[in-house]
Length: 210
Image (tube, rainbow, N blue to C red; front, side, top):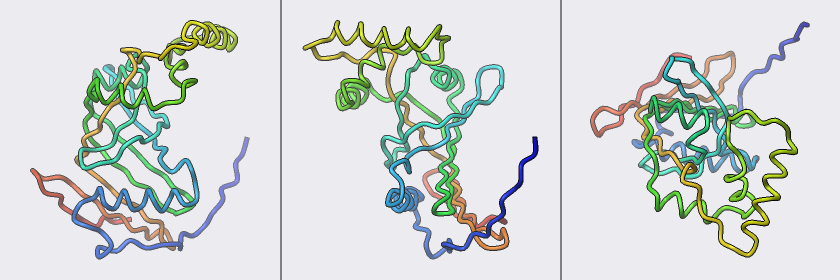
């Protein structure tokens, strides 16, 4: 099977040092807001982890909070990514917004969010998503789709008219970031790349070759 490569030049934006604030979180927040004007999925990112054997895995998850503490997302702690991060707390994240011809790559280490933070977010979720957190043994083998759907129906009856408590195996991770790389597509593959590397409490900026 063959695949014909599509070629395009990137010419929508530029990234100059003058556009880059001292704190990388400010620029990430700005780019996220700009990306959201054209897509409701702008907060989706690729999360890469490495398990205890050294095997890497990547998947798309959703950003739920961005602050100077780092970035947060939620999952089943017993899932593949949850187990990976509990065994090896190093993570890499990649945001890609092709309609903006931009991507951001970040690296950091993770820690669990607090029980209070987990409860607050779980209680804000739609009721169907709360039931889904109980019904899905994320990443485990599933015999059929109907098995999962029947479990959802069973739990819906159990919790009918009752508040749904957060499963203890479900919660969030905070990725504390120590490296950012902002990529802006430019013509002739001469892209703009600006990195931020944390040195003690300071962020050191540098322009990288495309």
